[in-house]
Image (cartoon, rainbow, N blue to C red):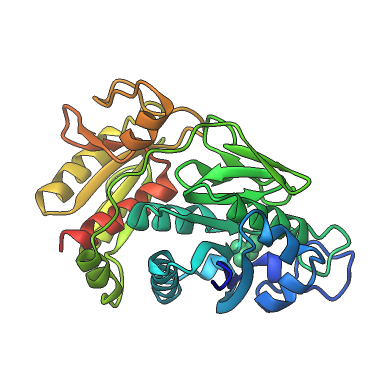
Length: 338
Ligand code: SIN
């Protein structure tokens, strides 16, 4: 029987970045080194991949971009490649090399649409491959260890930590451990090639059906959703401009416990009556809106509940996702229902 495969999909990012000097940690060019080049920089990667099953690595370059420029065509190729890998019995796990800037959104996309029954692991770096402090090779080695460990789900591996797609956020523009799990901390640590899980296996939700996925992949773009912040002096003008331009959905990065400036709220109620979808999230960096009608009794329920929305007295739905993920979730919901 042929060996199972761990497929590594390259999309670019700082992990594949090059600078003119090894001392240069900013101002480099992201997305320069091929995925084969990244694999070649870790001497024992084939041994780590082999793990208990004897898996072999297979590389595929899907894109070569700075992830700040992520677009629907790259997301679509990624969804296609990952769903094909999930359906292929010879593929044990998939791994994606990605920039850190929009990693939390791509991870959410794959988690929300595919709910994979195999490991889908994203990894990245904060220093280019040419840096004295390059973190990409170790992150890739750790990510392959997570892929080989076999736990189903979408995982993000960086700085020795494993984060769930539903939780991970980029919280720092420079330091090596720039990613963080939203509130509860990482799901696992990777130590000398061994994965130490800190949480029990997640409960998967319903993935998109093959028909829904095909309809999604056939789209030329996702629906237009913008994030707007509520705060001091924040009123209706941005809403009016976006409505006039044809926006289809708005995620409000609301104050505190998902409260919205009265003037903005009036404009949002009007937007809703014109068929524009509006969700509130919170601009607080920690915690979730409380008392908004969503009850979560344990960690797994909490993850599930983040997909749920509740309606408040002003009829503005509240979603328990940070704004970056809420925006992707709304684009997907609008796409699924259109
Ligand atoms: C990117 O997101 O592609 C560049 C920044 C990074 O990877 O850290």
